[in-house]
Length: 197
Image 1 (cartoon, helix red, strand yellow):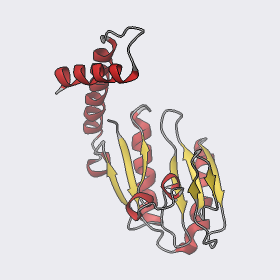
Image 2 (image 1 turned 90 degrees about the vertical axis):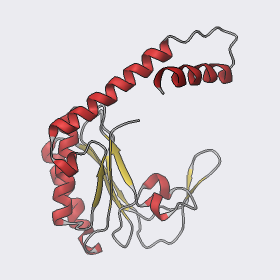
Image 3 (image 1 turned 180 degrees about the vertical axis):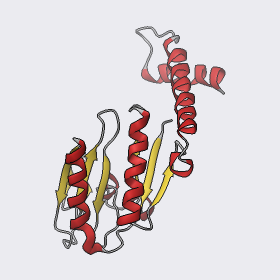
Image 4 (image 1 turned 30 degrees about the horizontal axis):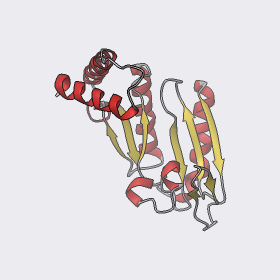
């Protein structure tokens, strides 16, 4: 449950990567947004993976940056492979990541002010016009499709009500010190099924 913006695409030309990164950095600096850059060798064919302890092993051939527009929103990720495809770093770290997984990027905005969601949509719109003409965006808040702030507000309001409702139901569950984690989970599941479905 949440409001996220999903996006994927490919640079119009891989040679635009440096210009793209420079411009996004300039925008971030002008707007006082935090960012960090990734500048790995894009031609290194070694695959990366996560070991049993969750540590990244190997080389991740990506270049780009992550931008944090607001502390209550996830970072926007603009990381590219050597062909200019947007890539999901987390999914790339797994050895057998499927193309559909490594090409889908998302940013959750539900806890940030509504203006942050709108700002991200406007930035993606600009990027689509200038750098990634095939950019596909799926906005769970429907602002990308409608540009209607009222619809976005309604969706966020509905989400907040559901989160509050779930929180209230869970807070009423009686748990004693001898309950196992499995017992507690069964109690939560029972309450949620009765009250919310």
